[in-house]
Length: 475
Image (cartoon, rainbow, N blue to C red; front, top):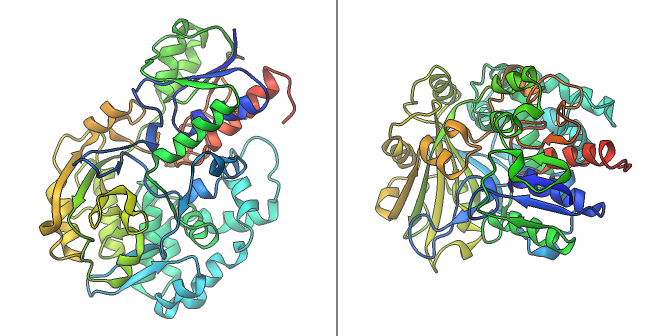
């Protein structure tokens, strides 16, 4: 009999397994796919020798995660690579707003908004570990460790980013903040969207927006290597559809979506709770393109050649219009794009002199159209001649994303819409969101706090709850 079984080998599942194994428990992870990693897999999607991140590519919350930072992952092969700039957001005139590790370098690109940006981020500089420990967790499980700091953050975070942007005098600064908040995949008029923009901006200043050497797969591989050293392991190619397919264990942790947990657990969970899981809402999808390139992208803005992440939206209105279109069920025209170019800092991803590019735009859930032309047109606006460098391309719409990873329901890469109640309470309103009515079953996916991102916090916190409640261990 095992002490614990974890279903799903995404960052949360692997971090949960490691947390349990560190306590001396016997742990096994079961993964449906033939390769472990979930949203951190890296594969040759276009041509031999070109390694593309299947989902996540740039990791501010990975390097800044309290859970992952406490693990000896560097000893197991994980190396973070930091570009010169975390983010560049070009304008059509060939200039760009930038987000840099240095606040001074950032505000130098923001014109008259120097003091306003400093007022936005200033109270939190040098206090990332304190803030992240409170923000990257549930709001219901006890008092925050740093209540005054969290209150300062909350006063800024509660606003829709479209309102928060009015504090700036320059369009480029409004565009920069709105683009960062666009990672939430909801319109900038939505409450709490400033929280996403502010946390990611602070991460850039405090810990950076790095990529993992060799690809995001290195994050999963380092977690698996550490788990192996603790006596645990991962079984791949093991799709779990019912609890009786799993070995006997004292605790079961699921890095899956709520509807999948309801189906797997069946009558082990009360009908009312399963109904609540079934009402959990999934949000907009993405349409993703991967490119093998003959050379680096010919950006008009020089700053874009120094950043691993580039946001493409010509104005606050264009960004908001794209996200609003998706929220109303229409494909955007033009789309707001999030672009990653890891080979500017990690040439190991492609043959010598070649590059890979990763880009996605938002689309309605389950959309079966083709956004590839719109994506390339948007890139060409800011990098004329881009198409001439394309050696091969790979297009992934919502159906392909879900086929590759069952947790990306209808192409939702965020594990559930980040809007309304689900911004604070996931998957249901509960004091301990990781626990279920069955005392041996726990949920630890992106459908639990703090939500999407490669940080492992959901898995770590769920494992701590299991350690206390099932094994009587103090953590």
